[in-house]
Image (cartoon, rainbow, N blue to C red; front, side):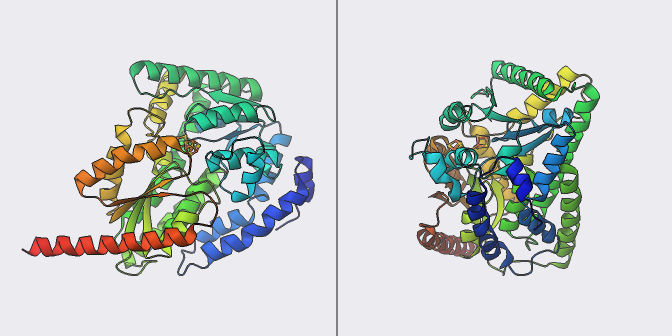
Length: 435
Ligand code: BJ8
């Protein structure tokens, strides 16, 4: 990797501590990713992006800022990137997925709270995340209580704009969300000094739609009988979508999709026959949280889809490109975003429908419900999801786990037992079908 120390210094980073962080990532990535066999050629691009995770993209952000451009950092898939890009600014996802940042987060937050929040706050406080350091403005939202209150603390260290996301989806909530998007638009215009015109917004909507569409194409390849790509690799691609240059990401992911579609034609698979197809649903997995996918895919399973915000919730709906004026465009955006089924909404029946639909579309054998510890909304929603899946005869198992590797052995044992159970229930069904 090129020498970026001067750049990091200019971002007021703690270089010594940052060295410690950089020292662990290559080995961790090598063990989890580079050890996989028969990976698609196209994954080389994403290997490169990870190797340059604190380098090349940060340099691009710095160049953008030198030219007067602004950078916005967000933590939730409800923050409309379209508005940011329409003002010639750049949006990057900032959720923390590393255990490294937890101790710094715990300096100002209670220990018994979600690791995603602790790591995100710790990333800022430790001065070791160049994305945080590059952001001119953070954009938070009122989703869960933990995030909502954490923004008040983060605000002491760096400016943050908070979007008030409604927690129901009634007509009056839609009106409220439209209003929140308008307030955000004003804020973005004020900070960037750029007017968001109908034309600019249309261009940005088309760009972000294109990014979501290429992810849909990627995920469609995972519906094939023979899986051309591992779940781990697909997860990595979605994680990278949150901060890579959108045009380059679209180009590289399109190339990869072509390769994967050719693999499907040839019947090539990265897993051996009989591998259990798993749908993962639950809390998001911020980079470098690859733990659950790695454990599943080294225990006899293959992840075929994620009903998470680092999965289908990020790309499933596209925004209306045909709106006639800016008010209609914003209405279209509000509709698009309120189509996301996060557990912070009540009721949230749409998520149950999504899980059942995705289970069928991706021909999954079972569902793993993943929750980060202390995430009350997702943990509570498990009951309703399980009842609905039981009714449909869909096997499901809940795994609650943080970023540390201490429980890896225990999770592996549970996964192996679950996959065995899937095998025997499949055999029983086959026997019953022949009677
Ligand atoms: S739309 S899932 S990205 S809020 S895991 S911090 S909910 S305690 S991340 Fe999320 Fe937006 Fe919803 Fe998606 Fe809180 Fe739960 Fe932690 Fe969470």
